[in-house]
Length: 306
Length: 312
Image 1 (cartoon, rainbow over the protein chains, first blue to last red):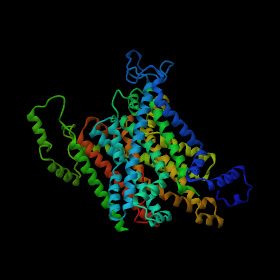
Image 2 (image 1 turned 90 degrees about the vertical axis):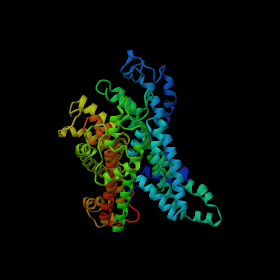
Image 3 (image 1 turned 180 degrees about the vertical axis):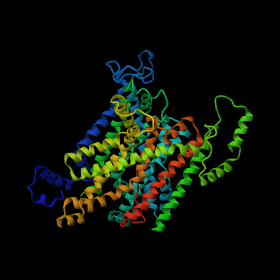
Image 4 (image 1 turned 45 degrees about the vertical axis):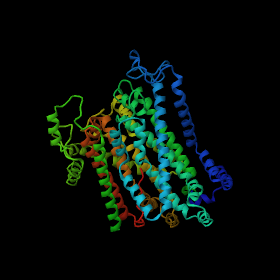
């Protein structure tokens, strides 16, 4: 690409398509342009399709079987996957297929809720700090720095020990310092935007700070905000699975992928499917969110646009 | 630069103090006390135990005692293991964890930089795509899942490595690999993107125009500049290895500090949880601080007001 000799080579088809691509780009809006870039990223597209599938299965999966996630059949325990129990059964004879999709509901719920709360707090705190400026901003960001330097998972583990396990407490624990990354990104974006002419113009025309923030600053940060949210979801899903794996997550009989993996660990040698199904779904979900997040970053991050 | 370091160091101390106070008050906010059990303990014994551990004092006295203890690196006694102190537990478990962590760290730095550079040399060719596909897998598979998978495949099925326990080098390989996967993937991605960026710089073009060999250009100009940002990853890297060790040590039955930490959580051994949390936080913050110092020395271009932000 930067090799000088390549300048003298004839254009290939891919070069031409790139050129025509650029022409359409120059007329496209920010979102259209991003969408065109995102669409051309096959991995990100596959990731988003798999995510849609995961969501659908989380909603409808448990309805496909005659079993429930809590009902035990002690005469049917530790069965391998079969036509009757598609993912096998666990040590209490519970159907793993049903439990895996119940786990999907919990993992996705925790991941999305935690990211949305991070989003709300982070955007609020970051934009307020950037708008206020001066000493107040300095103080707000120092507080954020101190909270940020505390190791994230340690805080979460500590809080779970203290406030006890459960879905709500996991979400609280994940968001208590989780919003800081978002706040920092929003603040640095707004600081850059504040220098732009259109903001100065809006100020000169007498727009209120609130109006400038809501109508001009935050909409222009949407790219980085969306990317951050997409990449926060897998880390929240990971944190939930990790906590449950350590025995701090949701409690029985509710199934989360982490608790199922923890249950399956002791039986790994003889009944490996009990570990591999939940473990596989944790990995696939995180992979899909990471692919989509990377795809969005490549598509919408203005710094990467050359 | 001295001012910058002092500022960073103050932040470190303040943060540690916040962590210590935070953990102390959280632990004391829990209803009940460490001796609340199913079996009723006679009142006199309970009182004697409170007195022994200083729990009969008002909270602020306990807090001051605790902070005093911290200043002299004394983390107090364990409530569950009679006659053992938190310091002893850390002294016993930490060397094992450190050994495992160092192995994972060295592996991830070497493998990550190698993979990332190779991918950047073959930018947009299949080698590049393959490496980046492996890297995104490495980022997506949590260490505790990779650990169980490696244990199942290489120890239980193929019988190539010991299943668990600690002692010989062959027992460290699988746990170290599971810990190293995520940092390796991150470093590979970071190295690749930095290398690609540096390849486009004017000074590399100049070097090419001068007719230097590509080997010379890469070793003298590209690698040095591309690897600088990798150093900032040292902080998050330590964090990843450290938290990974909680689960990996549990899976492989390694008697390290991570295992102790998880055990103390299950046992609700509050002083050990508190002490270990503070110890871990101190190590992580120290790593970030060292990165800041290193960065000042290595890269003269760095603006000292805005420190390299490490994100995890």
